[in-house]
Length: 358
Image 1 (cartoon, helix red, strand yellow):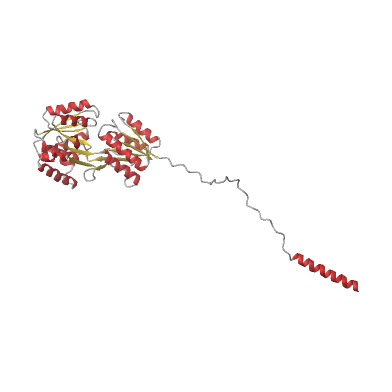
Image 2 (cartoon, rainbow, N blue to C red):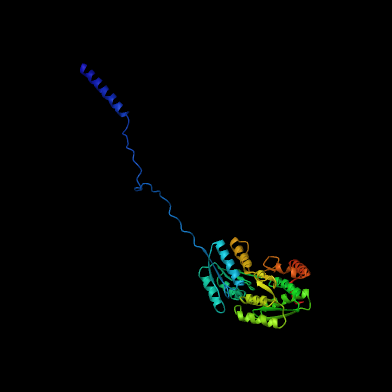
């Protein structure tokens, strides 16, 4: 009996101990560190790899004669460089592009990843209008262009090409004493030459109906000797005011006029500071102004290319006649009043191109 009781007590103790062990804390897990991604050098900071800058957009510009003509091309080249830098374009250019080269050069640029291909020369307009249809994803532009592409991916922009010359003609009619004024152009029968003849002569006769115009042509934008020869011919025929608009020859003709006491009008750019006595003014139609219109408009999305020629003049600030301030005290004030009135009438549409031929 005593043994049985003792065994019962021992059994009870064992049960209690078993319960105590079962309720105790479980096994402790050893914390593990996250896997290492490799040793890092002391002081080294991990940085992202730099991304490559996107390639520059590509623009091409060509002209028919020399870049150093002192006028049309030189003015256009300076402007296109400025605009390319402004808008982040890589610029390629070629000068003296003429004849059969024109189509090849335009086509090569268009096929070589250039998104905007521009010519500074009006006589490239027809070939550009054809080539533009072959490359509808490329934008083209022709300064003084007189025809646009039917595909609508070409800017053909031009001045009125008569308003500034008309005003210069008024000035010429006011200062001539011989009543003979001379005009030198590249050709005698192109549309642009004939328009200059009409504007220069009509402007002069608006001031003095008895003024006679004598027109000659160089047949070259770069033959300086021919330019001087044409100027001598006009002076020999009695002209005492000469306007030359024929590329590189413009400056040669002006030099001759100044040296020989003949009044001169500068073409394209302002050369009023060449002489306080014989440069009466500058007939301004600069490619730089037209380039700004189309390149800024293209990049900023404010002006789209068109199937129509874009014609701008005095009102848009593309053309103007700037009187030489040094000549003002040597000319009848009535001449300047006449110029101011005619400028206002042109801007208001009271004088239009058809009036040149009436």
